[in-house]
Image (cartoon, rainbow, N blue to C red; front, top):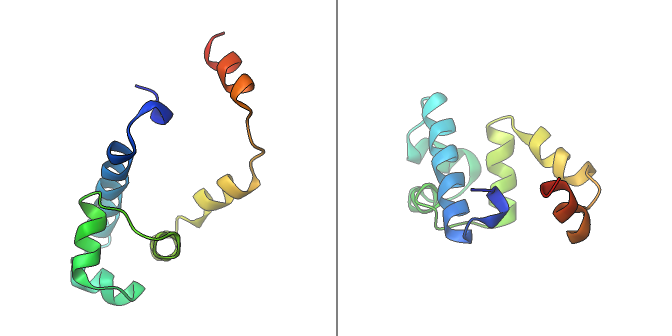
Length: 91
């Protein structure tokens, strides 16, 4: 299934799982990560369960895991029109 065709909740769950994996790779427990980015342990638990967060907290997570280049990809990319997207996928 194409990523953009997924339901928002499915995308949040995937992001949450990725955050959890990054946290475990750094050998942090939820409390340690929460302290590092200034939120509660429950907030980290909610994010990992796919319940979402603010953009500010998401940016803090990207910084903590040295993944800000992903944010730069978004900021530096030119928007694709719906027509261009359709043409690209239906080649």
